[in-house]
Amino acid sequence: MPDSSNGSTGSTARPSRRTVLAATAGVTTALAAGGTVHAATGPSAPDDRKLRALISRMTLEEKVGQLFVMRVYGHSATDPDQADIDANLKEIGVRTAAEMLARYRVGGIIYFAWAHNTRDPHQIADLSNGIQKASLGLPRGLPVLVSTDQEHGIVARVGEPATLFPGAMAVGAGGSRADARTLGRIAGLELRALGIRQNYSPVADVNVNPANPVIGVRSFGSDPQSVADLVAAEVKGYESSHIASTAKHFPGHGDTVDDSHAKLPYIHHTRDQWEQLDAPPFEAAIAAGIDSIMTAHIVVPALDPSEDPATLSRPILTGILREELGYDGVVVTDSLGMEGVRTKYGDDRVPVLALKAGVDQLLNPPSLDVAWNAVLNAVRDGELTEDRLDESILRVLRMKAKLGLFKDPYVTHAGVDRTVGTRSHLATADRITERTTTLLVNEGGLLPLSRRRTPKLLVVGADPASPSGTTGPPTGVLAGALTELGFTATALSTGTAPSAATVAKAVAAAGDADAVVVATYNVTASSSQKTLVAQLLATGRPVVAVAVRNPYDVAHLPGVKAYLATYSWTDVELRAAARVIAGKVDPRGKLPVPVQRADDPATVLHPVGYGLTY
Image (cartoon, rainbow, N blue to C red; front, side, top):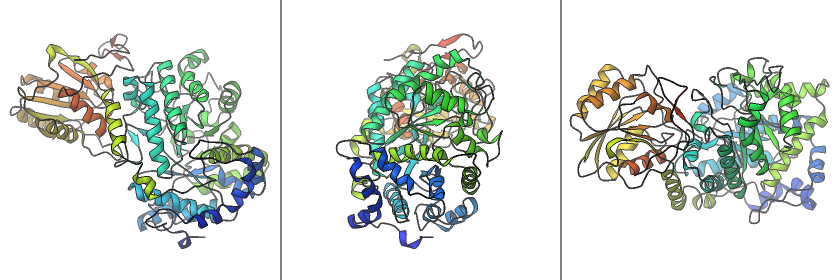
């Protein structure tokens, strides 16, 4: 297997032009008459006849490989750390990304922070180049579609110093299609500079269930049309930066109380409810030219009475998505390692059934060897035809061509430096985020706080694990930002479930402060965060609460006289909240979901569109 011959591309992060031309000679010759992607002027898809000619020269094994998008451990395509080599051997049976490409000829690779793919921008660029070099150096080698989940907010795989934007529900609170489009454009430009060409974003799910454990603030909101507008705008932004975006999770994961990572959720919408609630954002994404759509591991009996998960449902993926909605782009599964898709069928059946349902890309199976051989054997046994594989491979190759991967799959350190985390991009993210912070309560004009009257602040509260690539912890980020704004702020983490001793410590510390800022995180009726807030209020000190994830917290803490919602605990959102607390900017966000009363969930406490200002 090619290993050491496909090493790092060095300080320039870019092979010589001669190397590029040699590696891609067969591909570019085949495509010569069909047009290519011109980065300066936008995409121009090659003639399908040329792509079909490429497909006709592929072996069956190569065709099967093109359908898979797989994880791989390590910061380098050929020289990862020993721990990552060990993880690859255990899970994939290969040492490196280069070896995986040589053995399985996968068409795509997905980056994760936990797989040590995304340490820093130059390293990411080098990894991307190493992957392309390894694949293109193989017989009939094709460029690889590198993807990741960069939703922003609580799901991001590429962290600082890249630009991080507010998450979808925060963007929904801002309500600006222009901001959503700008987010997609800048995020896309930065990903492209790193060699990542497919992003599994935006989330097109309409979050109508406050108890949803897996979508929640990853959704733009609860109103189908508003979500549809923002999804379409973000798709256009990504399109303008020549990145493939992905609307997820079809047919809609917004109304569930189960997490499909752990079990198979059911959604009991009628067909009419699905058309009114769940379908509009996907229809808008298709109309906006979405390049790929990700499936959901959910059961929707009204759409498929067999109760197969949507990922494996031909009535849903072919009958509704392809035939009724007219979508002919790439369909990618959600991760095949999730329990939701493994509950009903074995790992050897899932990829075959997904292809029979209408899927094009098989994402991250638990065992690549089992899944790859299952598809290969299904073709050899006649359950799948080679023509069926060719349909999906053509869609995948069309997307690769549109993104410019046949023309030039490589990136440079210089391109990284002039694009990723630039001052203007970071400033834009701050401005967009300032328009999302939502003021839900402000009795007696408690906010903004005055540096003169309340110079000494105590910041306490929940410190959930920081989203990828952000500084954290939330109390520390808030305290640091408030100190920069002229206060003297001290951070004291009390956690998501503070003990009586922790509460007592916070109350004692509040005695030395002029005001208290408390970060809340998914407060429930039985949460000890309620005890913390009640005892802080009893000190008589002014208390400002900041819901750093779900905005529903405010319903459980009626005694708080000032309450902000940030929709996430990333640095950019917490810094914006600090500026609102200090009065440097006015709160402008409006709730994109309703908040029900805690004691009477049938009654709305704050409706969609609610939000105060100064």
